[in-house]
Amino acid sequence: MSLSQIARSIKASPTLALNEKAAILREKGDPVIHLGGGEPKSRAPMDALLAAVNMINSGEVRYAPADGTPDLKKAIIRYTEEYYHRKVKPENVIASGGAKQSIMVAMQAILNPQEEIIFPAPYWVSYPDMAKLCGAIPVPVLPEDGTFYPRLKDIEQRVGSYTRAIIINSPNNPSGAMYPEEFIAEIVEFCEKKDIYLIMDDIYHRLVFDGKKPISAFDYTKKSVEESKLIIVNGVSKQYAMTGFRIGWAVGNKKVIEAMSNIQGHQTSGPSVLLQKAAVGALNGIQSSVESLRVTLENNRNVLIGLLRSFNGVKVTPPDGTFYCFADFSAYEKDSQKLSNFLIDKVMVLTVPGKEFGLDGYLRISYCGAIKEIIDGIERMKWALDPNAPNELYIGDRKLVRDWS
Image (cartoon, rainbow, N blue to C red):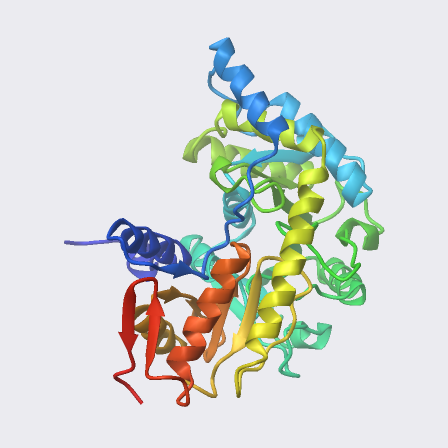
């Protein structure tokens, strides 16, 4: 069967594939622990659920405008003013089927074939393939100092005549690193000087720890929204625990938002009006659920870091935010895919291989689940990897026996 060049270059999302594998194992009755997911277990805010129920009861669930409903745009405008300190207009806003779609249509609106988009490594697994879907060239940049915190000089060295855009995800998936204000200020100034686009993937921006505050890239530009090539992307999936609602948005200059809307109109049309109504409920409603989730995640992170530090040889940098820890397991196995498969096969713990994020030898471990699952999952991993561990391990009534050295 003949497939297009783009189709042949794109692989399945590894994180979505893991979710599917976890579901299959659970359906079989296996006691799997999924430490690879990015889905908080808390419920969606009641304001969101009630807003959706009220629309269902009305029976008026119709088509949506390609760029989002007026009431969701109003909520995003208010949110942007509160958290990004910038007043924008409806024509500066597009609502999409998740932040992922906002990023995708932004790339399609600004990237030509063979042009380059730069992003620091480790990076979200979808960035390279999203660039390829545009016929563009993904350019990951590994910080020279070996940390998870890029410096402007790391970026500068990779910028060339074909560079069209830079994408920054902070707090970062998979590392949890929140890039310093100084770096954000420098990258905004650099992109303006070079006249290239800067996409800020801010999907985790309120889920930060240790007293840190969300950063607004708008604070570091002297340009108006219409003069700027800054595109801010956010959504309800992470901070409001509304992953299945698939509502995200982007804020940018009128010209680029119009182009994004035209593209989205031909791809999917507007997101479901029902789900947009739920997003309005979340954005305009009581915000205590966000803080409650943030506190829970910070506590879970602290437990996970303590457990990982009990391993001999594992190197861990405490995350500043998000749901994830990106731990260096290369002392046990440098091939992260091989290590991840080993943990699934031997102790039924799912993690995401670091090579999917641009760094082999690492595993991304999620701490957005229940504390008991985190503790049990790490204990299973330690038993599987520690050569001095007991020969047997019980998981419920099931006995596992070490048949490897």
